Image 1 (cartoon, rainbow, N blue to C red):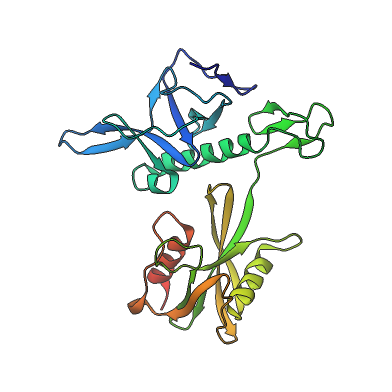
Image 2 (tube, rainbow, N blue to C red; image 1 turned 90 degrees about the horizontal axis):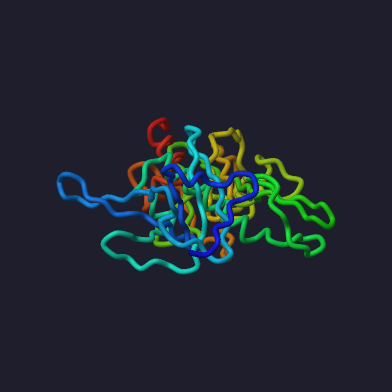
Length: 276
C-alpha cells in the first residue's frame, strides 16, 4: 500500500473501526450488502484500515458527521469497476441510496478533496503549501493562507398570482425545469444577485424578496441560498445563451421538475403546499 499521509492535525486512529468516504473524482465508493429479504442495499465502507489503497498523492482528511462523529476521506487514482462487493456511483446519484446525514457528510468529504487537489501550491508565489489545520493551508514562504472555497449562488422562486416561473437552462441534464439561479458577484448582496439574475435571464423585475433557506451544493463547492419573490413587471425575454425556455406554470400543468436532492425542489414543494 502506498504511504498514507493523514493531514497534519488529525491522523486517523488505526486501532478503531472507522467510516471511509473514498472518491475517484466525483465517484463515491459504496459497499454492497443484502438485507433479510434478499434486496441489495449500499453503505459507506467501514473498517480499521482503508477499504482501498489511497492514491499516491492522497492525503487522508478527517470529516465530521452532523452528529459530531468522525469519519475519514481520501482519493484514489482510478475508478473501481463494479463487482459483487463494490460499486462507484457519482455523488448526485448517491442521494437516492444513502441516509440524508451520510449523503451530507459525503458532500463535505468531496469538497475537502476538491480543495486538497486545488490548493497544493500558493497562488501568490507558487510555493508548495503546508497543511496547518483540517481546513487551512499556509505557504511557508510568503505566509498566504488557503481555506476551502465556497462559491455562493442565489436561487429564486418567482410567484405570479397562481403560477410560478420555471426555466429550462442549457446546462440542465434531461428535460427538467427549475428556478432562476446564478452566482453572487463581487459587491452584491444576495438579494441583488437574484434581482440581477432574473433581469438578465428573463427580462423580468421582481419584488418582495424574502429568504427561504440554504443548502450546501458540493458540485464541487457551492452554497445555494434560496429566496421567494413576486413578479412585478416585464415581459419574458430569455437570455438564449443561458436558457432554452421559460414560462409561468400553475400547479396542474407543471413540467418535469428537479429531483428531491435540490433546494429548488424544496422550494417548489413548499409552494405546492402553501401557494393559493
